[in-house]
Picture 1 (tube, helix red, strand yellow):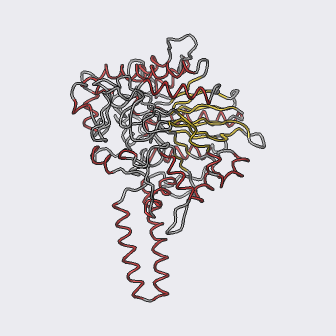
Picture 2 (cartoon, rainbow, N blue to C red):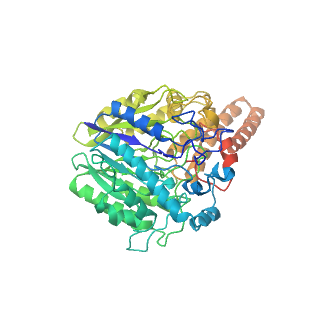
Length: 527
């Protein structure tokens, strides 16, 4: 058995403590140009001191990881805003965007410099990781903030390579290091696919496991500009199918790693990929279900999972592996910095699987009291321990966990409560505007469970409707037994309850502040 370190959404900001630091704008007076909090603070992206503090502790608990993965968003938010960093209004709250403003930024005079800066910051982050873990392979996927503007990536013409654009700049920055002991993340062999679409592969675990590093920016609902070949931007799906077919033929296993997950977000329940790409992704993964042993994503800054239970339209299919979402290092949205250590090895019978996850986070909301283990997955969800002993982190184990999270009309499952308590990696109950609610009513719990299973907005709404009808049906049975008058009032209650559900956003975080700041144009999750 071995293990690997999993970092996500680092959002390294080398300008923390200066007037050019990124400030979320959500937190009413929280600014990031003050170095009083050396390790950073909620509402700011990660200063170098926080990144190094996380890596120092990671070396204590994961002294010899087989490899390190980074599931996207290496770079701070709003790199393009560095070129207007004296403009306070422009600097703050820069995550909200619309197509027109993105296109304008992509054609601004400062755009080439902004792309160079993003590549430089990405390279600096990988240099820190590689120096902390010398001779250890660092494997990454691109996130939407690793390109400039956010979600904007011009792909080369069919069959060509983007040597001089954003992908070329990133490749140049990520295939060199200033340390003789630090291994660069990319090499010359990655050029054909990375310069075509920002994706590549790595073989690990004695070449028994292939990690496909996917560029999920291409499938995002916010991706610009519209690619020439809409069915398969960057020819990534074609490449993915060929690699998985090769793995199947050679008896190897595969881990799919990307940034934006093919599902819904947790906080506004928005669909994160365009629907045609969601269907294509699950079509491929279903075909090679016996090959794929892990699906690792980030983007939401919280530790979560997605799992399919039924192969119906709009829902995640019942695959043999769940989708795992890694917590973030950046504390921008009120979460405490955290990372995973994932065990990798063989289950009884000899198959290689992901076996378990240890999660570590900072101890206090001011980040000054060090780090500690937050929890071990198998110990937290003992309801599936017998399955995990035989299959590791399998789809069946997660379906058992999901089943245990379902409740009666009046009582929240203890397993769902644990899940919610770990989403923001131990951040305080108030969470500075986006904290985990200590109480989660029936509406909140339905939304939680439907979000875990849905792949599209249609699937999510269908799930909500089914749960609503189930609740309403129980009320009508009681009404019939008691008489027509009670039945009438039961129906009225169901209608009113449904209207309340439609108005509420109560998954497990207070999102109204975020929505007001970002406006209605940004349909994606705040990441």
